[in-house]
Image (cartoon, rainbow over all chains, first blue to last red):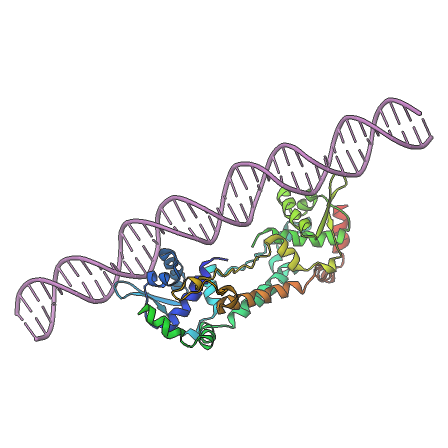
Length: 153
Length: 153
DNA sequence: GCCGCCGTACTCGGATAGCACTTGTCCGAGTTACTATGG
DNA sequence: CCATAGTAACTCGGACAAGTGCTATCCGAGTACGGCGGC
């Protein structure tokens, strides 16, 4: 899995606390990340409708919606793409008694088992929102949002 | 995820039905796969203790244990490696108030959420064995094992 | 006829290239804020 | 003093290289079988 997933997840939490547009270079400096590369990743979130971007001075990235409506699955999918990790190539169709008219991706028992596992993974991620993460952190460190806002000044 | 996972899963099912060593070239021919590359993947299963290999004429690969004791997770792990897909780099340690002595991989809320999701995925795969897959296929196509044994004759 | 030995052919196993994707970087298009000027 | 047009600087956005891991292949080490010679 792309390393950018970790970056943008933490960045979404920070943006949730800040509440106004912040330029990518500053967001990257917070974790000492490659600025241009983080920018590239954030572009993907804009295309997915998770962030909004404004150009020019005083510009930057901000959350496009309420943190409570942004699931972790959405963020991961925006970076990794919607394709499942296990993609059945349907090799059963190449077996000696394979049938080209059958959709082996749908009927294959192995394909079904792998899909079921990935579904469990996605449901787990879809059950947590950015707001949930923020709440968990605040419960452990109440001063974190204010301290972060301060730093981004 | 590596495409070889699909190959070896189907191959394990076939080996479960055949019950004796089969050379990799023949196993590959069944699905029209690159023989040498499938061989390489099967080597990984041997190292993981899932298959046994015998050299020379009448040699080949065979299941090392009962199909009911081989989980899908074992097979996937043998190919993909034991490392989780999401590996937390602990970028929190690089934040302005980061602490080098803290294990952020363990405490980070985001890292925890991602681990939890992957755990659900692994439990789903660990709950199904190769024998279960065989049983599902046989229930749908009772003649499949015999037909497969015949082909490998 | 039977046993032991040798050669041969066949298989796995690891070492070796080729390719795709992730990672990382750069410069241009667009936009905003500032400034100077005129009313 | 205020409005306005021009200018300049700053930001995102997409196009452009480099590194890493998957994909694919080949040849060598080891082994079992079959044939052959000797007892």
